[in-house]
Image 1 (cartoon, protein in one colour):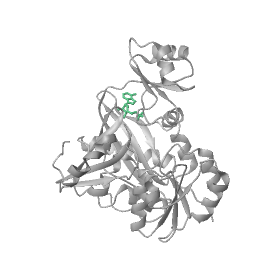
Image 2 (image 1 turned 90 degrees about the horizontal axis):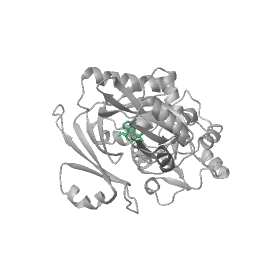
Image 3 (image 1 turned 90 degrees about the vertical axis):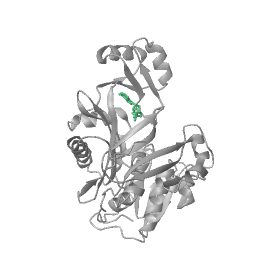
Image 4 (image 1 turned 135 degrees about the vertical axis):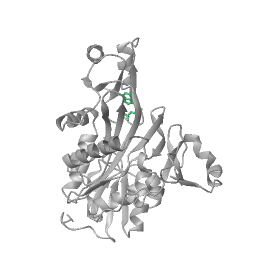
Length: 366
Ligand code: AMP
């Protein structure tokens, strides 16, 4: 049944989540604390969120399963960008979907995302669409080298990314990227990477968590430092940019905005994600309201909680076999250990995370 957009979706209702990974799992845990049920929809069986929520296991394109799902839930959201946007569109004809499928659509494609940022005056790395090795040669001549060639779709954690250096053969780079359309971006010699997560309600109220610094290893988030060691003015600028994007998209839910801080041109937006984000996991243990609870509050039209940070924090991802050290982490009484219950450990797979808390203002280092 379609929800009246002006009314809160009360505790006791069922939140439908497209995707069933760790973000869905942590959302379902936060939702349960507020008295909600969750029902996840994904093609994968035995996934992290299915251990803590009702589940439909079906392809995203299974229209009959989508229609049944729409009947069984009071609001639909997603925890994963690569859900086909037309299936989310179909759901939105039957049930309230937050954020809207249009927000998902913008964030699913790097070119569309960059064009959207340009249209609202948000600075990003210079970039060009490329559809062949010859086009890549021309784009690299225009943008300069080094540059980064990325797939426009289905890329995450550095998958589908190729550095185009002074001596890189464009034919080889094009073949390595392996998609029919790509985006070439200027390589940004950044000082640091930061992100901001902003929550926005159906009536346009928004609050943000403190900007954090993110350090990547092999293009995968390794460590988040909260708060980012940046000036108050820069932090405010980052929060303002995230709020401006969420407002322009009329986003209801959470928006994570990843940014580069550069020496020359200040903040450049790298990527957005209209969902909870790995760089917000520290909020579970270090803030009055976690990103997951804030997400539930925003999509259900409840008052937002305080995003205040009561402690500084360092969050470290447990990637692949890192998770085998769980005993060691658990025997450190100060470590908050989160394991995602994934049956199979694979290289590069996010298996859990550990957050360590520090006194507020102590400027923690990993
Ligand atoms: P992405 O999938 O776009 O988030 O890229 C993953 C990581 O690769 C980023 O967090 C950066 O560390 C690095 N990266 C991506 N694009 C660029 C760029 N244009 N210049 C420099 N580093 C980049």
